[in-house]
Each structure stands twice: as structure tokens, then as C-alpha cells.
Image (cartoon, rainbow, N blue to C red):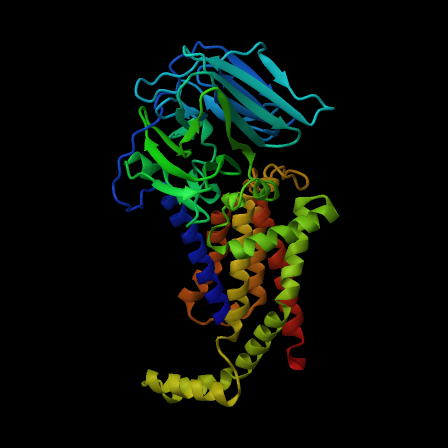
Length: 531
């Protein structure tokens, strides 16, 4: 059956696309002009023995180094580092082989963070541990440093209940007799190459997503920037109002969102020891003698929850990267969420969405089988044409087209349902590997994580069997060429191997889709005389 061959070719191209995409995520493809950017701070911390304080609300726990006031570690208390683990996920971390920090400070002419000598202010706090109580809505944690001239710098971390966005506020009191000029910066830096123990999907091409930097400006709502691009000193250096900078990985993000008027500089830097950075620098602020000024920024440290991120900054929700089929993945995710609210199980929601998709494409499926039934009834006439003009292939094609036109048959009509369903299949794939809501989402029995591969490979084997039965209930048996027949019979085995690494939720979708297809084929073929 021509449509079946088209389907398997299309599906094979899809799997090839996944392999190509995984390779692309690891390669350097950016051709921007080389621009060297001077780094702001390029070492993990010049005083690793400095005092640290812990700040936490009910969803995130931060470790702040008092030398500079940078966030050196951050744990997400609701999200576990691995399935069945009791340890919270460490998003930011500082170890001997891996650095991932959110830095902030005041630089410029009178800024206490000296980029030339690479020195930072050593802040003071009267406590080591701060926690938002259950009956409190907001936690304010001030740390203070006083310069030799008597200028008072108060850096305050503001956390709210159930929120992943944190405010970092500088309150500067100028006790001198001259104007102070400085800029606030926010910088995220990370080791370019992940240690093996942190790269849990390194051997699974089907589960790899973008890991790197990203930014938003007045000209570009959302733009990714590869770590390899930064490591090759092809750096970002743009001026924009508002905007934000971020570092992304699967399901989670860290982002600085400036909260000031005027134009910010967004930049990237290739730092020492294999560390890359993305950050922003605010416009210069002037603080008059004997007066105070406040400048602040927001910092997102957490999961890529679209609704919450959208409320924090414009276009920040686009960091949930659904690829080039985002316009399908986004409504599919909203529909899947509605179904989850009804069923309480993401696996059952995927089954329901499969039935819905099959229902939507039913008119096309019916048209497909009508077209196949008509073509099947014309097989004797087609065979006569082939025998009559066996030495003239051009005449055979011409006569067959004339026959299809006379009988009002579109020979490509059977391909349209496949053409419609494959983008849905791809969109669901992107959604499963990019939506944090589906991370560690259980189904039933042995499936404890729909976003990961089946640990026992039972679902892929079931998918291969259903694909085999789809072929057997089709007109595959009418293929006379032995080579074509062997290839078609071997295709379910090939796809079973591919699907061993695919997310369980996607394999589940395909199994249900195949089962519905088998039922539809049985029905339409047994009632073809009525169609």
C-alpha cells in the first residue's frame, strides 16, 4: 500500500531528524563576527573561605557567599535530583569540577565591585540562616558593607512564598560630598562542559534538549546563544531597553531580569577554566551627596513553569523551547493540562489526547480509506495498462493519471492523514521532553516517569507489535515485489529499536494511535463496499 510506504519513509525521516538535532545541540554553528568582551568576574570566588548564609522559602534554598554577595548554590526543594531520590535538585552549585553561579554587584567608576583588581565587598549579616515562615508572605534578608569613605551599601534578597523569582535590591547611601557613579550588573556563569555525573542524558539522543544561554531584547523576543559560541569568543554585545539574560537546561532555567529605566547592555564572556557567562549591565546611576538611591533586579531560579515565568517578564516563558512546532506544542500542552486536571494522571491524559487527535483526523482517515478502496478496485485496470504498455513507462504514467482523473481519485489522498498526524507526533515529542510538569510523572505499573525511556523496554516492544499488525491489516500483503515486502516487514523491528530511547509518554501515544488505526482499518476494509 503506497500510503503505508509513505508513512514509514516519513517516520524514518523523523528519527533521522532527531539524531541530527542531537548532534546539532552539541556542535558549533554560529557565524557571528568575533567580538572580544572583557569579563566582569572570571573566577569562582576569590575568598572561598568567606562566610556563607542560607536563605530559603518553601520552594528554593540559596547559599550566598558574603564576599560579593553572590548566590553560589541553589536547591529546588520540590523537585528531586533523580527519580525516587530524596535529595532536592541542585540547580546552582560550586564544586571543584563544576561552577554554576548567579552573580550581582555594583561596578563602574565608584562601584565597590572592582573589575580591574577583581575585588569584592565583604558583606556583613547578623545571622547565618533565614527562612520564610509559613504565616509570612515575604522574607527580606539584608546584608551590609560600609566603604572606607563611609558609603553604606545594603544588598537585600527578597523571597516570597511559593515563588521562584527573587528580588535583589541595592540601597546605597552616599555620605560623601561628591556624586557617586555606578552600574548594577547581573551575571550567570557556568562550566561549559558538564561533568559526566551531571549529564544524565548524555547517551540518549532522543532525550537531549538545548543547554546554553539565551536572551531577550527589544529586537528579539527570544534568542538562544550556544555555549560553544561563547567559548569561541563570538560574544553577544547589544544595547536594549528592558530585556533579560538566562542560562537554560532541560526543564530548568536561571535568568536575570533588570528592573530599571534606560538601556541595558547584554553581553556574554568566555571566562577562565572553561567557564562561560551571560549577563547584563544597567545604565549608570548618579547618587548625589548625602542622599540614597535604590536599584534592583529580579532573578529567576527554578523550573520552566510557563504561566509563572510569563508573569515575571515578557517572553521569559519562551525558554520552554518546543522547537519549530511550538505553535502546535503549546495548545497541545494546554489541552493535555485540562485532561490531567480531569483524570489526575498524565498517562491517561496522553491516552485521551490520542483519541481526541484521532477523532479530529477521522474525516481525513475516512477519505484515506475511501481513496484506498477505489484504488484497490482499479487494480485490474491498472494491471491491464501495465501489460499493454510494458515497454513505455511514460505512457503507463499518462494512462494511469487519465484513469485516476476519470474515476475522480486523488492517488495522494491517502498521504494527507499521515501528513497531519506526523506534526502532532513531533509536537507531543517536544512537549514531553521540554515540559517540567511531565518530569518524573508516573503512569501505572512500571512506568514511573513518562518523560524518560521505558526501563524494561516493554512499551517499545508493544509499539513494534502494533505497528506490525497495522501492516498486516493493511494491503501490505498485496505487495508483489519480494524486496519491498521484506523491507516493509522489517520496518517494525527498526522502529522498535529507535523507540527504545524515546520518552515513555510518546511511545504510549503511538501504541494507542496504532490500536485505533487497526480498529479503523478493520472497520473500513470490512465495510468498503458501503463507503
